[in-house]
Image (tube, rainbow, N blue to C red; front, side, top):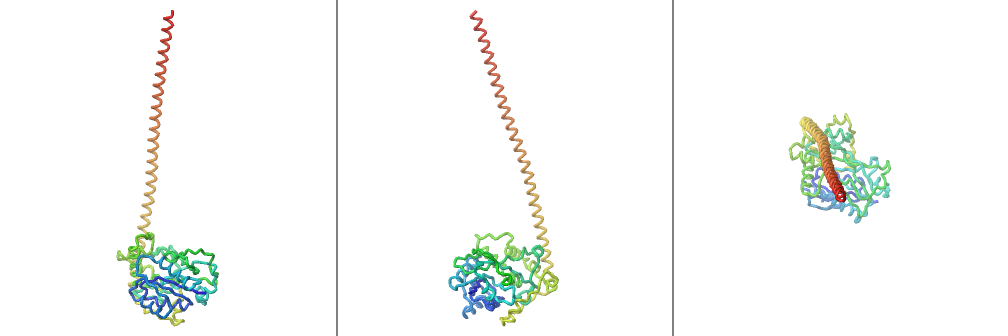
Length: 381
């Protein structure tokens, strides 16, 4: 069994070393990484691993939201050039793990039946206090178990979409975002071999701001792509342009005290794995002053409440507008029906008048014929 992991990355220097070391220590056999013209030292870190023969480094300097095509190429390379039995297409903030922590990824995949073909893996967001900078492995240790409704109250649309895992296939197509693949699933792993993705979506204010900048610029450079109006990256891009993204970001985070009150569960899988396997420890976080973080979070929640109220008002206006359109439509239909009836009545009246004229004409002709007949009789006499 050969397990391959692919990723397209850009400016992930705060976490990329730990991400690579983690997956290699978990038993991944082949790692293929495409660097998307990073400028923060990510390229140099990846080159260290490549020079040591621990991963295959590719480069793509274009910034035009081509992730789907690039990942598809890497997934096919994993199958064709490396004979991958299984392929995991990930991001640099996603750490795949067996739910049974006593297993490694290598052990779990060795026991999975390739006849499954493909399956999806749930993604769990790990959150915690907001920081200025830092990977947050020791800080973001709370599994975010908020409902979608609770998330929307802090400006997040929903829990993340599951990721797809698939067998090696030279013709596979991976959709943008790694959530869908062209290989049809034939089932799910048994419970004892279940997997999950531990996701660090908001590692720090610095990382989030840079990530949003790149996402927005990528879509602007690819006008043929049309992200949904609800696309979280583009919503944040608009907020960044308005200079208000930081309070929105703060609203998503929780203090340790808030998290302990729920709905969150503490999960120290990542920092524990780093320590137990002697992996490189990330640089220390640069924390945000606690009082400032609290004030920013309160401001962010206020902005979210304002946005939700405005959205509800817009929806109400739309619904009222639709109702008004219906009323107008019914009124217009009534007017059209009345005009049609009036037209039909006028037509009938015209037909009646014509009939009356014809009758009159026929009657006149009959009278003339009768008079002529009487005159003829008189002449014969």
